[in-house]
Length: 396
Image 1 (cartoon, rainbow, N blue to C red):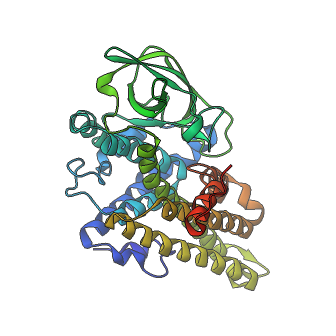
Image 2: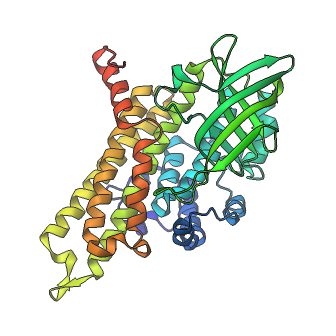
């Protein structure tokens, strides 16, 4: 089998070799799919701020969805966290917007149902989501709340017989404009605990509106959602979610996925800069021969390699079932900070061409800002780790 390292020049320490052969084949498959099928669509749609709906059919034919879930998806048994992480990296290496579309569906939405739903609910929703016949979204963030969502969720749920009535608003919800199933998180007004509900497309009172004018993740259709008297049957309440502690279990897992996504953006920017440096001529020679350019490239590769090593160990902790909030928080905080450095150094190598979309690095540079902020800011993740290592809470 052709080794992926022939294409992924940033894998300086050969982390790919840690995957067993069957999982390496899936990673190669993801690489080829993103490079040959997805990449030609990216820049045009990123500039236009549009989501190419044909992507759904393309992913449907790829067989890449549902891989992490036992009993669902084309590949059984479920794959390792190391592979799912490297796949998120591989997708983001081509485009972070497309990777986010897939991650919201395959990660946040499906994992919420897989971990928080009953067996009946898993069997009802996950097969068609794994086949990508139905698309999912995850609605937690609110217009007036972000980091304080655990205790400050304003969207409410009121039990009314065999149904629940949801009222409130959500913001920055990826895929929500076209998703078939949206996992909505709301505070039960009777017991004050957060609960999860699967709201199906077309439910009266559920109104998503696409957010315009973004300077990052322009392919992702983020929405602001208003919920006005949205009636959801008890059968659509995730039966295993009894409070925010259960929600935190989901966020712990997905936060690590965002760190892998940040690694992919680093790699994409670095590879673009390296190729450009070999081709761009100044003073009669390629700029790759200049010491200061090599310094930027080597610093970028160091950030990539250090981040990749951290994420490999995080995946091992996940596979062993012993990883904690502080493990994923440290990875998210550290890797996204290193990503910011790498995209800036890479853009610098391009000079003026670095702001032209056709060279790709401008897109990586812009998208990095979104990844740096979501799934917990650097400051919030720092405080989670700080509490773990000191035993003292600095939250206010």
